[in-house]
Length: 297
Image 1 (tube, rainbow, N blue to C red):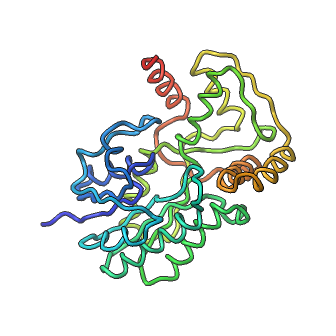
Image 2 (image 1 turned 45 degrees about the horizontal axis):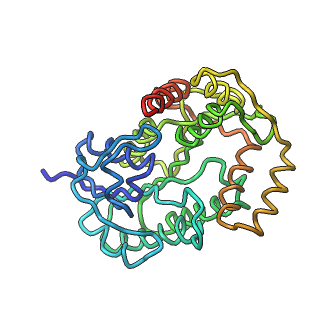
């Protein structure tokens, strides 16, 4: 019996690598769609594994170049996409990547009779529709759910890799935080979320919200980061109105940065707690990441 083949779009990112690994461990053949195939050969910055030796095929594609996405779904049973804009890029928008890039992928999947499309969007999206990144995700969700393609949309609260930046601040000895830090979050490890994603192949659920096993205030997530680097917590809380003002000014000076900043400002004012799953805890992640960085020095 032939293995089912899955296309993983965004395979070189934090979640993408864990998804590749999980699919392979469950007996799927993986075609990785990436901009830079060489990235898959080395570990990622947040402990995510190198996976180039696991994939059956690597395909080079860029969401800004629609032609590069033609025929990438040929011979594929399942499409999984976490392809999206994660850092500011000059001249590139979330609409172009998260919405139109994924729509081009969907069109190719429909043309090649793919059985199911699994997509990573955002938890609490309905509360942040004025944020460009969230709006772009949700425009694609609308395209996907309006199409004839069977699909599941996964809505994670936030990745451990998103929390990894707190460690750099903790190492510097001081952290600036927007808001009072009392809102709650249960971020999820890439390996735990990958299990949810692969389970979705056989699921009839249209949408699945997922968070990790531990729920913390933002202050507590920072406390753990300081503890991991052996320093006392020092946080300066910045009022939300300052973040809004900074966002307003940044919108004039640097639109790509403003788009990313708008998401950070919105998340800072919300509780982000989804149904808990998985076994990985944030404190352990911080300690492992801190130990790895210590060995580099």
